[in-house]
Each structure stands twice: as structure tokens, then as C-alpha cells.
Length: 173
Image (cartoon, rainbow, N blue to C red; front, side):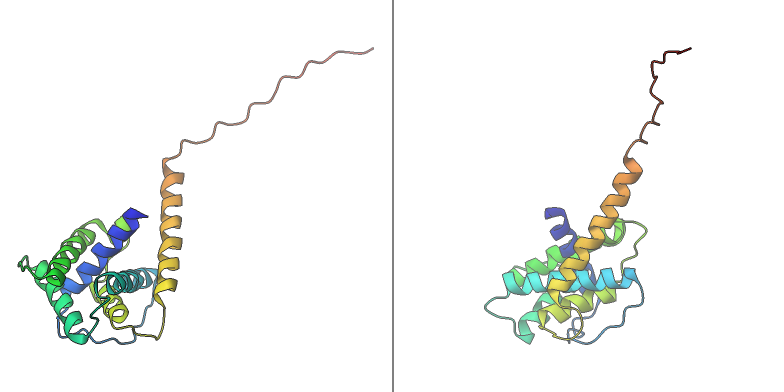
């Protein structure tokens, strides 16, 4: 679960970093594939967590803009002492790593920065349309379980073939 949280934070940060800080308004998104859904849900799920944990006392547009700006600047490796800015730097750095490794650590899943960012922005703004953060969490857990099951199946040694059991026989005449 800890890996999932780190992964989602990394993913959200990458999306934040790659979008302009002026694009922090919540809006409806269109997803056409599982990859799109994963990108968006990672942003949505992480945005909810960030909002609940770090922005309890101030979830205003100004605070959200500061966080998104920080993530954007983190991607460009600039530094600040502000707490939300530092969080943005961490998220941006994590997302940068996520982009290199593939979505959810799977190199076959391509990260879509715009969708992750929009999911994050929608969660931070409490956008109520479409997928809810709890649904995003469930979806991410389901997909992660499927990915892990596939990896485990590929790594597991093949089961030995069943050998016929020798049976003692007695001829009766």
C-alpha cells in the first residue's frame, strides 16, 4: 500500500509539473482507454489525499494555484521554502520518476500528464462530476492487483506435471 501511495503521489506530481499553473480549473475529461482512466484516477486519488491532508485549513483557489505552480516549478528544478511549494517539489520530482518508469511501474502503460494533472486539479477543487476519489482508489487498487497477478504468474515456476501413480496389481485366474 505504501508503494501505491508513493506511486500515486509521483504520478500526480508529474501531471502538475507539465501543465501550466493557469490551468487549475476543474473540468470534465474524456477517457478513451484503460491507460487514460489510470492516468486520471491517479491524479484524482492523489489530489483528494493532498487536499485532505495538506490543505485542510486552506483549499482556496490561491492555495491550489500555489501548489500547482510549485509542482510546475519543481519539474524545472526550482526551489522555495514555502510548505506547499516544497510539497509541489516533491510531487514534481516523483512524477518525473514516474514518467521514466511507466505508469504504475509498468513500462507498457504510458503516462498522460494532462489527464493526471486534470485528475489532481479536479480533486483539489472538489469537482463533483464524473468519478469520485473513492471510486478512483478502488479502480487503482483493482488494476494494481491485476498487474501484480500477471507479474506473479510470469515469475512463478511452472507446476510439475502430474506423474501417474504406480498401482500394485495382482493377477487373478
